[in-house]
Amino acid sequence: MDEKCPTLVRRVLLSGIAGAALGVLAGCASPGSPLPPSLKLPAVVTDLTATRVAGKVVLRWTTPPRTTDRLLIQGPVAAEICRDPVGSTAPPLTPAARNRGARPVPCKVVERVQARPGVSEAVDTLPTALTAATPGVLAYRVQLLNAAGRTAGPSAAVYAASGEAPEAVTGLKASSTKPGVVLEWTHPARPGDSVELARTLAKPAPGAAEPKPGQPQGLLPGTEVATESRFSAKETGGAIDRTAQAGATYRYTVERVRLVSFGGKTLQIHGEPSLPVEVAVQAVFAPDIPSGLVAAPAFSPENRPVIDLSWEPNVEPHVAGYKIYRTQTDDGWQLLTAQPVKTAAYRDAAVTAGQRYRYRVNAVNDAGMESTPSGEAAEMAPMP
Image (cartoon, rainbow, N blue to C red; front, side, top):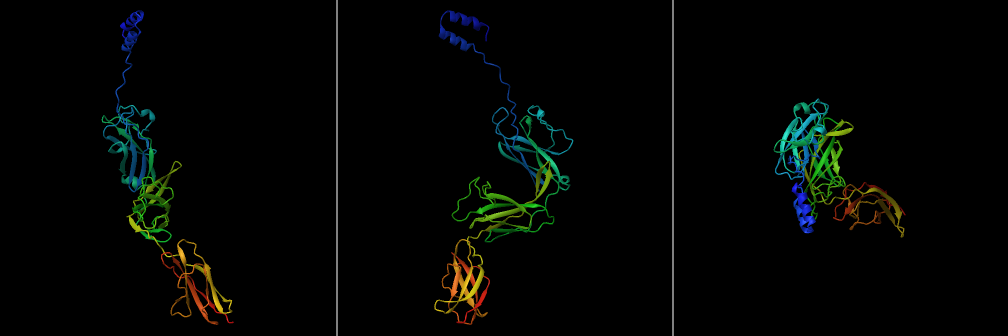
């Protein structure tokens, strides 16, 4: 407060002019300590990830939209990717070295890219020494620099595996079958790796809505994806996607994955993805083959010879009934039922006593498609 303010206030109060006193007090208020100038340091990255794919490490993070003092970042910033072999003699990046703003924290910079607030990415192409050697571990950090080359410090370290990557998947084929989409590929030269399959919706089924971002649409129930889904499986040279929607068209790729243990955790080395294959999933398939067909001789209520047939009913949906075929020779099969029978049983009353007959059964679905014939059953019509 100005030295003259106390004397002036006393004079105004003695005069009884309260309103004037308040005005004088307001005019004599102190503005407080001045704020230091902003260093404009981009905030530290908190969500860095590293994925090893063949001879590269793909790094992704979110570039913060504000500085450490909450000011909006204007324009792009420089992002430095630091890579250090775990166990090296490089000086550690300690928390005490952060937030000084004097100069970048020392690290082995292997890549420098421009980044804007939001999702960001960089790729570190590994030297041959790190892709041909025995498996090891690499520590990655990213630090953001302002226009003056200053940083608030690096992110926490994330880890990726060095060493040889698994071979690429070749000979990928996809076919639509009743159990699902069958995927097959060339067996690996080196067993022990797992595989990761990716499915992209190329064309939705007729009448189906396009999947929304974050909507489950995956090979595994509950997978939160937009149009791509991934799942892992053992390396057996094939897999079945049982969740493919009838009528839709999908695009598939497969890549091998090698596991590297580190500090109680497991790191992955992904091989190059296979060339994509596309398959349209059939909407209708023929029913399963009926099983358990048996034939037994019997007599009708009129004491006429008959042969009774029975089999295991198909439990799948959309089975409309069964067609029964009969023959006595190898010249051809005669259809006995003009319309499919609804139950898993049939009585053949058009037989001659003492004659031997062979039977088989086909299941029929709603679309009129027949199954492959069942196994045969043979029986002789009984003599009265």
